[in-house]
Amino acid sequence: MAQKVTVPTVRAAKGGTPLVMVTAYDAPTARIADDAGVDVILVGDSVAMVVLGYEDTLQVTVADMAHHVAAVARARPRALVVADMPWLSYHLSGEDAVRNAAVLVRAGAAAVKLEGGATRVPVVEALIDAQIPVMGHLGLTPQSVHALGGYGVQGQQTEAAAALIDDATALVGAGCFAIVLECVPREVARLVTAEVAVPTIGIGAGPDCDGQVLVLHDLLGLEDRIAPKFVRRYGTIKAASVAAVSAYAADVRSGAFPSDAESYHLSDEVAASLGPSGPPERAARADRRTA
Ligand code: KIV
Image (tube, rainbow, N blue to C red; front, side):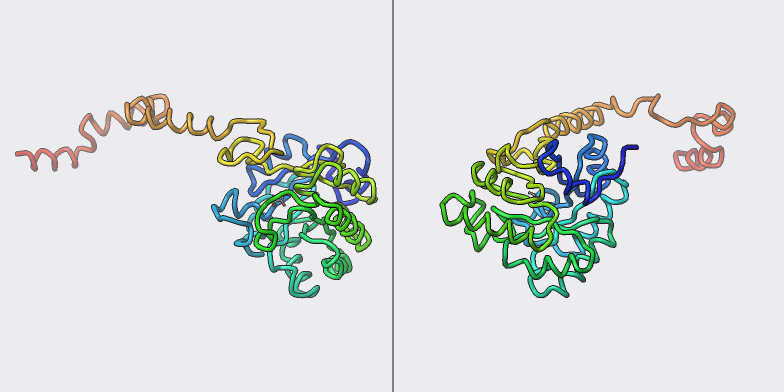
């Protein structure tokens, strides 16, 4: 087995071969990601929308995230497992954030990710002081959907772009080992990437980042309802799955499934002892009923 990916491995990938990160939320998706050789598995709070059917990511709790982190960790992936800290799990105090992050680490995460810039510095410092590595997340931060007024591209004006660069510098100063840049212009992502000494991992941030991340269900085409501009679908798994389940339904209805070969059988001896109508006692009872 190839060597386990660690936080120092990821940090050292700055400027090298682009890092590959995908989301996974359970053991089968973690195995898919790991068999494909990704570097980082993100147990994202996108689980809320992608798997649990919520409208936004604000609905998941630390307990929900721990449940999914544990399922991913049980697949024993080679990839680094990073867990999203859900909304309100790191906004109240550094102490509260450390306690919540510890739940995710004990569930199997090697690092946590949180959203926000310079205002998060004290929390990042508290986590790092507790030996919990932190990945930052700037640009479109879905936990701020109400404050931002939607899921639009961020950092499009000079001031906002400059603030993003300052935020990235502040997060790295506080000790973040990597930063996700979501939905920002390519030019801004390039500037941030040039500015910070840790890898930037882009999603909707163009090709100049040190790595890329996509939601697994988007890239597989298992989620086929929405397709943001930055999603490239590498599979049509939803369509393939609907076709497979439809074929199963048709076979059940026509009697083509299951076949005799897909059935278990008695030994000839036991079958003969039962006779064509079942055990002798039952056959006698049936005879009495019809007499
Ligand atoms: O939760 C998530 O899936 C994420 C990625 C979009 C980076 O944070």
